[in-house]
Image 1 (cartoon, rainbow, N blue to C red):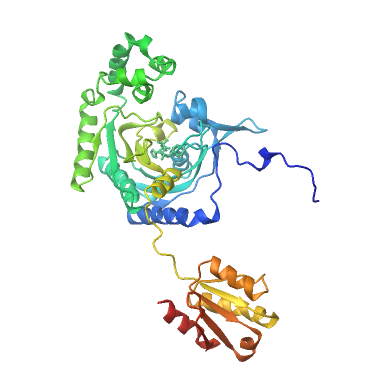
Image 2: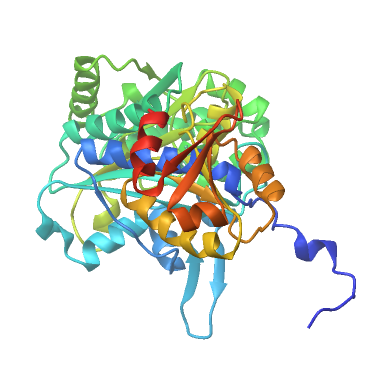
Length: 427
Ligand code: HAM
């Protein structure tokens, strides 16, 4: 029932860190998703969809209890049962879960999967950081840890961004070692930072005990300065990790993908091992895409199956495409607007629309409007190139008027020829 009561402003305000994608923004989003699918198809990644909600424990186990995502950002729903469900903060752990649960190893080795959809993190909203955002991700899961898969994921992620016409890409790479060599590096880091603990920020002092690698990720001025002299993980890698990383670099060089080594790149999620990467564009302080190898993730969940993957944030891509003035949509398709006058024309307009659909022509209309003026205005607003005017007389005579919206010139054509004439004029 209608009510005159004043509606609280907060009720009609989108939750903090979330946003609508309005109709006029949709073409760009559709185009980005289309290019993601084309990239996935080309590199043979099959689509997978997992639920938006998963058991919170899945993420707690796999992303690391001391990661920011688990400590501060996971949105958990406590239901009536014993399980807590979480709005997925990322897509890799759910895919690992789905791989094991559905026995996806039966689909062949390696299994290449891609996904696209919303993720949720309770972050402090700011430019490029949302509480609901969308990712496109590529994952390769196999029974071996072949460096060619690292290269393939990086190449697919890079080509995806290139196909979005984003220029000046900067691919940063590092290796964070394996279960054998990382503890050695961890100890080196603790030794280095212990005498400097007082100069660290509060978070890093805590991280020093719980997860020292994360110290390299801190953006705090004092910590950044200390990081410069810190030991390099690349000097501590074991033979296997060194060989693996060298191979990845060789493969990337083979396809001439430019990269920068960044010894401080450690990533915020704990499931990574060996290769990690982030891709930036000039002027963006935040990564457009990121990922790495996760040889222990599936094992932690019950099945040995090394993997590697990466994901791109669509909001960040949209922002870059807009701010850099990238013309991704090209010239809009010429639009034809159907105008009807009178009841008979209105009824017949419906079947005419179906005929045009069958012949592959796009048509706009405003069948709910009756006056010619209002419909011409709508045709103008939609920037139509041509309009079809279907009046009472035309409906009787099985003809239609084609009007050039720019010059105003009109021609009457028999209804059965309208498809051919339109196709010719739109060519
Ligand atoms: P991530 O680095 O947390 O990695 O996120 C990947 C990308 O998602 C980021 O580079 C960024 O573009 C976007 N992103 C992350 N958080 C936000 C946010 N709050 N607002 C907007 N965009 C955001 C992962 O999620 C891993 N699962 C990637 C991966 C796949 N690793 C292996 N496979």
